[in-house]
Length: 285
Image (cartoon, rainbow, N blue to C red; front, side):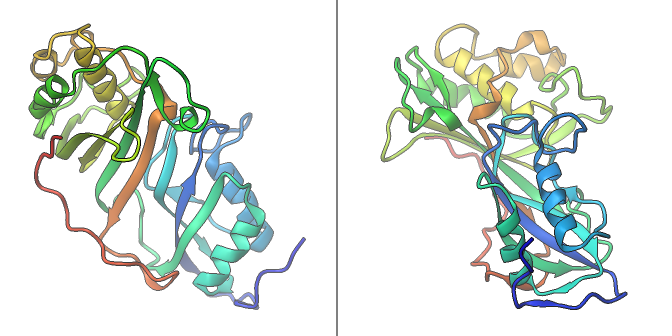
């Protein structure tokens, strides 16, 4: 086993909490949360952490992504007694993690920091590959839809989702939560400037339920190809009935793109750039 980088200092009895940002290709993993019989993101991260600190505390994430879902910026935190600088955590963990999982940032945060409650908003990006043929360089992280899609109709229909609503119709049957009011702060549909066959749907909100974004995207695609009426989104908000909506888009096109925190910790590495303000409007292209 390789030793931690030179940033490591001998262990002490002082407990501290560390914030990490993760990027990962979730294709070969059964989601974020730990499972006893399948590879997961937390499982791989905890294995790597235990090599550095055998007494590391529970790893907590800001979201529990489903099997096959990806992330570019997912906060997680854990407690440790190791005195290791942020750069040391990043380099030591990336030495031990598989290539599909990368730690992109580390910092020390307050002991009471909770990545589940700290975010002010989250942004998901769903990529639709609108093509009759597969592309091996695109297909792994996008949903191929062979039929033509009418983007203006999809964009117009999506305006019904902006703002605070009861989104109980927009969740999987496995979501047990009784409180289903959520706020969508921004929603955009746009073709990629360099690859016009790719349509990117970005949904920003304060909180999300299980499969909420995938149900939104699947319904928008069904609207775009004429399988359901554009008014179904508004109808579902009023009825609360999942049957008023279209299909659930497959997991592999979805990425947790950004989680906005009010506190990015102290002595972080590498240095973060300017953080965007919270979005407050709907963007439709």
